[in-house]
Length: 353
Ligand SMILES: Cc1cc2nc3c(=O)[nH]c(=O)nc-3n(C[C@H](O)[C@H](O)[C@H](O)COP(=O)(O)OP(=O)(O)OC[C@H]3O[C@@H](n4cnc5c(N)ncnc54)[C@H](O)[C@@H]3O)c2cc1C
Image 1 (cartoon, rainbow, N blue to C red):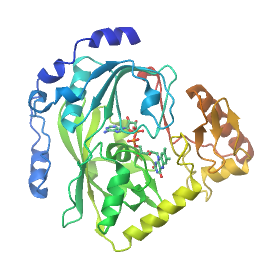
Image 2: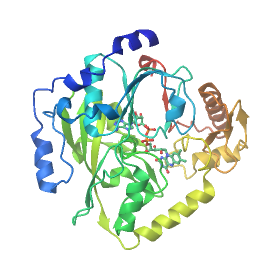
Image 3: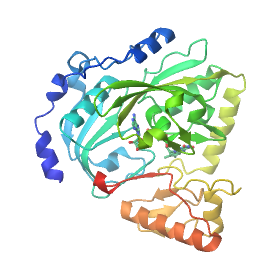
Image 4: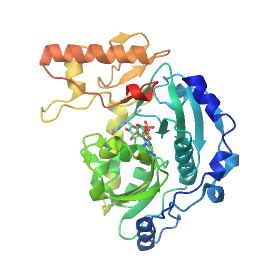
């Protein structure tokens, strides 16, 4: 219940500074750091929040509206809300959630989520790393970025410096953590192609380094979505390749995106995954079904790109879910194809997910 969770957490903020660290250090993270000569110190399980948490900059609040954390501008209040400004604070937040048995939802830009109109009964952690939190790219093409770093910016910076692999990230409005979790992709590229390692914090509050072989990726899917023990992604290391064409390729992608997507509207990007191996996109099917511009309540199928649902003002999650249901039904009846959602619906009660 909303109230009981609120009460349980009232006055608990100081707990973040005294949460005991878990018992075991993470040697793999440390050795990884040494081999990469990291400028940003790696977190280890031994880091105590007391030594790393800047309490002044993080505040625990009640009933923050999720619509303010979502590019869709939809969603009711969460019971508890915390904005973190460093992976160390994120680590503390994960430990707090564990200590209080709270459902935990870590968010980047909320650019792939549809939140319930009732909100979320648990702790929502908004991940805002400082902007200067991606390391300069090394001579080997390796770049490590904190989870809250803007994925778009990383893509633009690396392409401008002559590195290929993240050109597609230009124009994707999420964070590095969200991109790895979702295996974001576009224009024939995806995050999985260039991920080398992922640093995570577990629900037990332990920091772990996952190698590429520890994580599976699929179309807009990563096995991290199903790892019950995962609390949050802390940082991702990418391995890029030298490319003199990267910058121009990215410009072309961005130009096409501006012409074909309603980027100024409130949306969560593509709503449906493209059907695999059918030679047709979800957007094309919805367009052929005559649904461009179709509306339910405040939710509307974009006139520009049929796989985008936009909030034309005052849309509720109920409107969007009804529109999704209508589109799926129509496409199934016309083409016998069952569309599947790419956006993540976040229900009020995590048990009903
Ligand atoms: C205009 C527009 C265009 C888009 N274009 C594309 C595109 O071309 N390709 C594409 O793939 N997507 C696209 N998207 C969707 C979205 O931007 C991506 O999926 C993006 O990677 C989501 O990142 P985020 O930080 O916003 O994640 P959020 O929406 O905040 O979260 C998505 C999921 O990831 C989890 N998550 C986020 N951060 C962490 C973390 N640090 N640790 C653990 N879990 C975490 C959340 O809990 C949630 O389940 C678009 C969206 C918009 C609005």
